[in-house]
Image 1 (cartoon, rainbow, N blue to C red):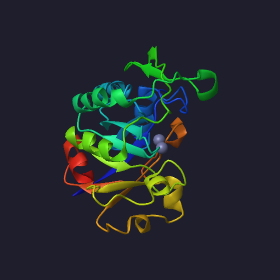
Image 2: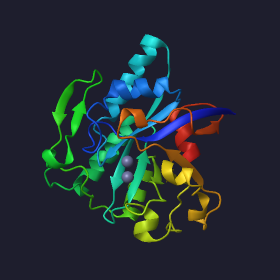
Image 3: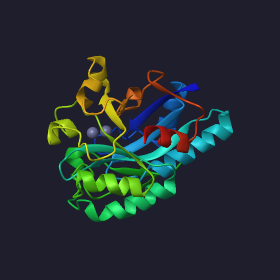
Image 4: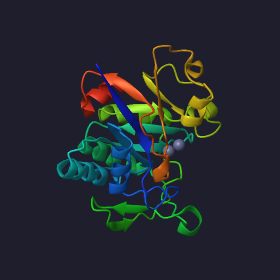
Length: 243
Ligand SMILES: [Zn+2]
Ligand SMILES: [Zn+2]
């Protein structure tokens, strides 16, 4: 077994609340500089920049020989306003998932002046689009249906920052639904610092807890803080471990 350092909750400039310099190459550069082995791109209710970050990491590996595994992901806000991190083994599954989820997306237009811009980049950090729908608005999909859709696309369903007083499964539903086979939950960085962890998931002591940065700024991306032990590093192995 080997230790692999991760940060599986990172926003790009596509999330309105994230800095506009959260570009594919700057995220990849910061993660490599910090000594991470695997990251996930998790914008609010879109996977729009995941492919660009994956490509930027591939270019960085060719140019500098530093490898960084990038998992395509999304932070979905369910109809109950619970945030869930959904990660996928490859971009095709992530895009198929996104296509299915799109009928649940809110079409309320974004107010860029209030909430910030929602930028799609290419792998060279060139701005190629601005998304018009308000990405921070909750979707219409239920927590249970999102679980099913994620599993259908071979993804992993990770309730996000479950220790927070808002937008979390514990704050909004009161507990982790025991009828769903959830094997991993995320504790926020602040919660972890306060020692909050497995006490929140008392109905399942085998559950994995992971701690990620929820970075909205480049400086917030984790360095070598949290790791998991795996026989080798690949998207399938990481997804299998979390699922
Ligand atoms: Zn969140
Ligand atoms: Zn987030």
